[in-house]
Image (cartoon, rainbow, N blue to C red; front, side, top):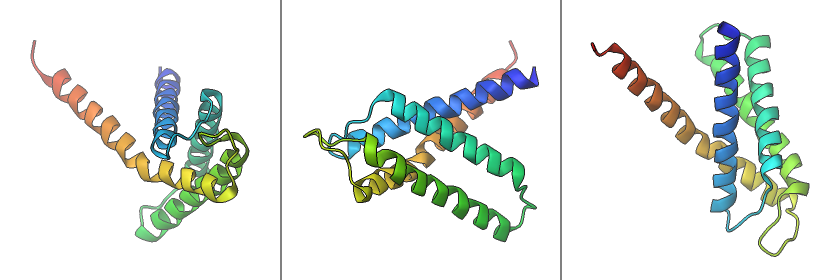
Length: 134
């Protein structure tokens, strides 16, 4: 049962991250990126984040949390810049350069708190409804 919940939550994270990537493309003046590239990017970034969280456990201090945050966001930006460089195109059909790809990756990172708020709010709503007596 625990494995099912873990896989389900991973899929929710991938779907949410994919939608954030598509939203970022939409906000960057009609940037075009295929769904398969959004999904692949989301899978890789989520796998890297979860692997990092498992390999480098935090002791709860602010320093280790800050270092972890910097490593995860930095990795996401570098990977996003490399990944989007050849796959994202502008409205004229020209492929992105490295600078535009990094802007897209940064915009994705800036939009991620929206996903966190939506997931947190959904969980709070579910807990509130589940605690009500029938």
